[in-house]
Every structure is written in C-alpha cells, then in structure tokens.
Image (cartoon, rainbow, N blue to C red; front, side):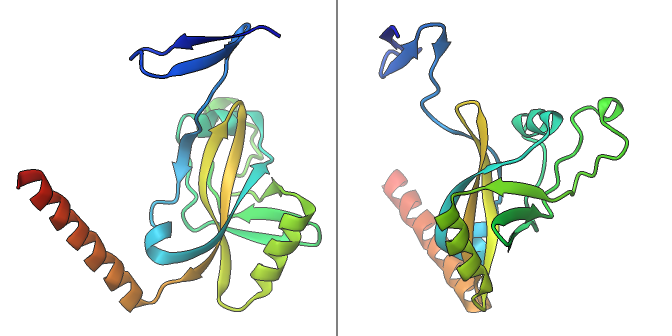
Length: 174
C-alpha cells in the first residue's frame, strides 16, 4: 500500500492519505445528549457499535435524531438502546412499518457487557447514551454509566460555570 503525506488547507498539519482514499483522522459528533453533563455524574464511558438500517445512517449523518430520554438495557448477553428517536430520512421512501423509536442493538465486547450488566443492576446507577459519532465510515455510540445529580449538585455546577465565565471575561478585558 502506498502512503504519502500532504498538507491540509491551512498548511499547518500534515494529513495522512492512502492511495485512493483520504483517511479520516478525527471523529465527527453527529448527535449529542446536551444535558447529560448537567443532569448526571458520569462514572464510566464505553464506545459501542450500533445496529442501524441504511436510511437511519443517512438520517444520523444529516444530524437528525434525538437521544434525550434514551437509556440502555442489558438482557442476557445483549445490550439495547431504548427511546432513541431516529426519524425517517425520506418519509415517502421509508417502509410503512418503520418505528422511529424502535429498540436498537448495541455491539459490545463480552467483558464490557458484563461490566454494564453489573452497573445496571446497582441501585442508583443508569446507563445512557452520550453521543452518536462517526469513526471512519462507521457510526459509533458513546455510552456512559451515570448517577443522577441532586439539586444542590446542579446549583454547584451553575455556580462554577458562572465563576469560570467571569474569570475568562476579566482576563480577556484586563
């Protein structure tokens, strides 16, 4: 295989290219759970593949869909996403029986599945999706084991955010 390096548009960082195809070096976030860091304390993160239909992939690549309110359940040796909404890409070309809220299977290693199952059975812990992103040509989902924050924890987060914003503002002007 022939590999060569070229400079990208701003001539600052070389981009590795292989013959015929440019290699994607970074991952693009397609759909994120915006309130996850505010509502939950994130304990562990996992990367998983997800079983999707072709038009669902096109919809996700168009940044349409929602993972708010979705959660992960582990049954036996399989994990599933429940409550993730992916609308049809083109309504007229979608099968009539398509359900945008259908459960979708996650692709994880056995040891990751057993870890998720143990933490899912622990009282007070939940497993939620944090984001859907592309890694190369594949769509991946970032899954996290979380604990819900109490009201006073949320107030601390808001207070910390405000003080950081004030510090940046004073450093910028001063």
